[in-house]
Amino acid sequence: MATTLLCAAKIVSWSMAEAVKAAKEEADWRAKEADICRKRVKEALDKVSTVAAATKKKVVAPPKSGKPTSTA
Image (cartoon, rainbow, N blue to C red; front, side, top):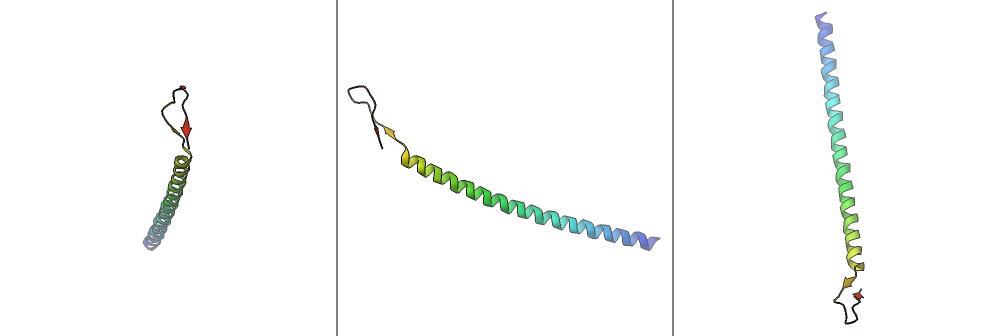
């Protein structure tokens, strides 16, 4: 009986060790994927910012007619 309990305890500890290992691998993988996604979002935001800056119209002081003019 004691041998059976000892074997059962070893199996449980091995299973727990494998579960911990699998959970760590999963967490590492998810962290890596999140890092890649953050990098892609940053690149996309930089691109949008560049395009917005290039297409932004600058409003200058209105001429004597009172209507504002814009320059590209």
